[in-house]
Image (cartoon, rainbow, N blue to C red; front, side, top):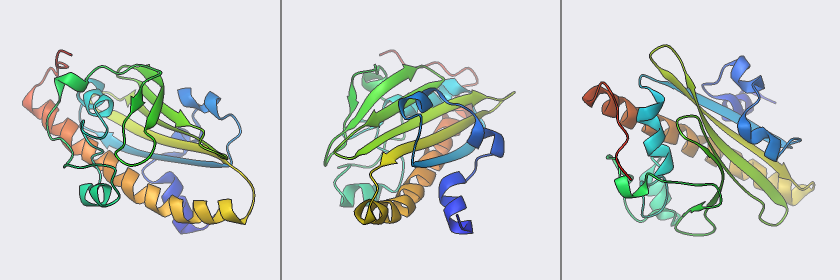
Length: 196
């Protein structure tokens, strides 16, 4: 893997985070692709979690490059800059809607700790986990993607196209969540999740 590939797969993460077992790993124990990206947020998990559970189309958005998400039909409005009480409850078995195409099936919800999404369309099994790790006064938000992709030139081409796009959008999403969570924490020293 070259330097650019390492950036795409490991941006912001420490070596320990790359090798740490995460809750969603068991869904795909032997991935053919894995990426672990991370960011430090100057806020407690309680200021970060609400942004994760309200993600989606006609919900909180994706906190990434909204113009690209709208261009590709994933969103039809800018991502929210406020908490949306009506979207603060999420359970395994539900689906986070995405405007065009299939949504993100929810596999695991552990409030203030982990959100695991995943699916298996055709020959492509995937998971996407967001995990929150408490530091003394901050939190590490870690995103891990794992996939099993069928062998062959078509699949290699798909991953060659998908990897840089996924990196760009996920990195921006992590930074978007960081900005929102830090603003929320600064406005309220004791962040209380809105009533559902």
